[in-house]
Image 1 (cartoon, rainbow, N blue to C red):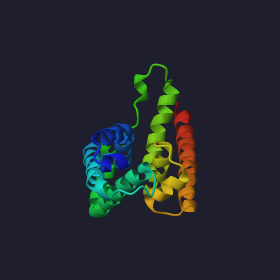
Image 2: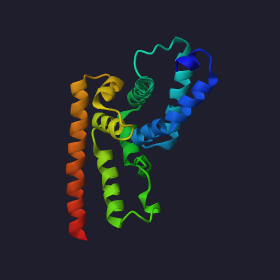
Image 3: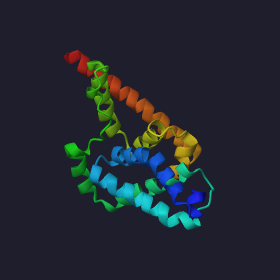
Image 4: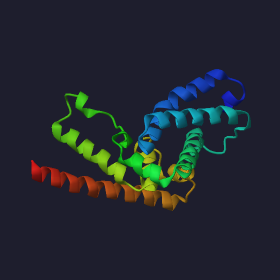
Length: 183
């Protein structure tokens, strides 16, 4: 980022190529709406470009990038009326789209079903746990970095991740038991 701030356009290309996939998935899995995710994704990169001249390496670039993304999500959630959010959550388009395992012949039907159950359970997590889980699981950020991104203490970050994993474990186990009992 420092090279880009100094005028090296190729440095920006490198940053964009390196982080675009994970950042886009972060938005899609947080809000479940591909068009809105695309808008927030583009706005994030726009803010990176605007901030380049004043950029200071006080944290890792990825922490800074996801902090921008997190703030855009928070702003969006605040701007949306609760009734609109409820109706959005009801729509089928609101389900986060994880990788489609059915296209892989090496994935068993049981694994496909468990993947679907996990998607359902992730959607049920409280937003703060969902975000912490996705930042930890999807991007591999440790609790310390998750905490920096969302602006909480390290201990709170660890707790959100731990509660998310426990909730997902319990949810998937319960849904799997119910599913297996019907089969």
